[in-house]
Image (cartoon, rainbow, N blue to C red):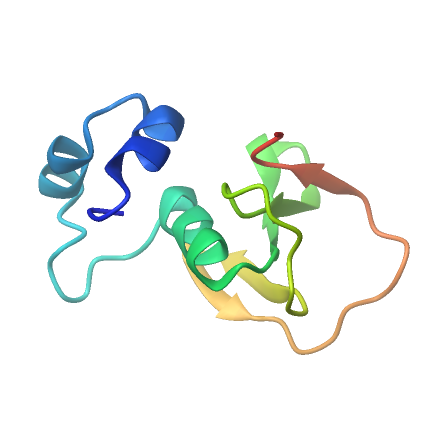
Length: 104
C-alpha cells in the first residue's frame, strides 16, 4: 500500500502515509481491514471473497477484486469474518448472494 499510494488513496480518501500511521498497519499484530484485503487482492491478482454479517443485514459474501483492472489469474481466496477476525473458509456452497466491494 505504501508503494502504491495513489491507487489506494483513491479508495481510502486519505493520504496513505496518514492512514498507515493512524491505523498502525506497519506494526506487527495489527488486524487488517477491508482496505488491506483489497491490497492483497490487487497484489496477488486474485478475487477475495469474505463471508460476513454485512451492515447487520445478515450474512453475505463480499467480493474484493484487484484494483489493477486486470483479469484475475488465480482461484478465489475465501475468508469468513467472525468476531472481527478473518479466518479461511474451507467449504463453499454454490448459488450464494455476493456484493462487489470495489466496483470498477
